[in-house]
Image 1 (tube, one colour):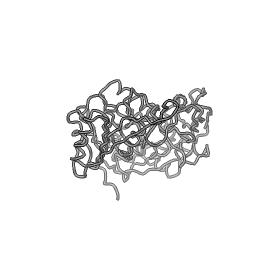
Image 2: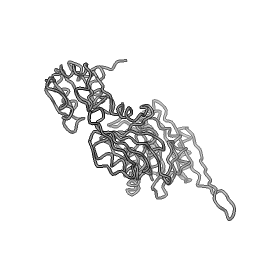
Image 3: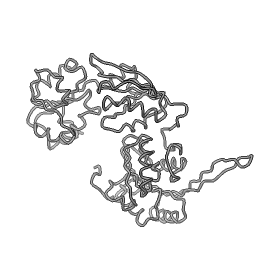
Image 4: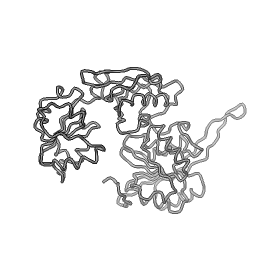
Length: 425
């Protein structure tokens, strides 16, 4: 099904031309023709400088910040033939995304060039489909930590010349100091260069700002092993005892059932472990952790940074008041404060139809409240009990942890949900 025309549709489709470090000589005849015919050429200053005089259109450099300027520039040149320059493949972490959002696919003519990832994999002999790509362009370096697993091959899109040293430091701090690094600069150009080394002993000075970092992940012998599924070791978290323990956490995340793009409210965040592992489930997952204690709120932020999900939003304040104005969630976890007046009502009201609510407690008072909600809304009421083997004199016995009562329910379709500015359609 074709998309509806954009109200800002240009008189002529906008040509989006990918260009590499090799500049004009590396372009196809079709791409060159589009640039020659353009009345307006929009791109970064460096990209515009790669074009020869025969590209006679008016040259417009992107301002900073770029994204807010896109609608204005498109509207300003709506009646003219416009070509936009992009690095490599415009639809791979490029300007093509923003242009498609503004004009729709029918308003674009995209002419891609090999991406830096394609060039890097060609130089390294790495299959593209087996190589994970992490971009640090305009994003915090901490997000790389979520992709670190023994034996994995990663390509990092650098923000600038300082990124390789930042990555080497992060790898060393996260227990991946033995990982091999190769920094590939000016890929596709005549003056390609590379630098090799180990993260823990990286001493190369900053080179070219146009670089891609290849990482061959190797963990140190004493690195804490983190898996790809919920239930990270408790010692992965900084906490003061307010932590949903590993086995209960794994069961809770299984019930919450994160899916790509979904938003979680983690109410009574404690150490933030539920929100952190929700975000680690998929890069597009979103989460808000609500914690009334400022000290714990800061701790949640540190845990999120260390475990590779710095996008976790932390709201400091008591619930339900602190929930006001948040986008409607796809799932809610309540790990503390269940008896706060109106908390369950507010969470249930805000939840999207078809969304999941999961609440855990170890107290009789909160357990009674969950029993009432189970009677009114249905769902599932379970008790989770975990025992650990411990020394008993010269023998071994079981030490029972406090049992956790868990209520979970799915909000029926058509129930309605509170909507907020910023909700996705």
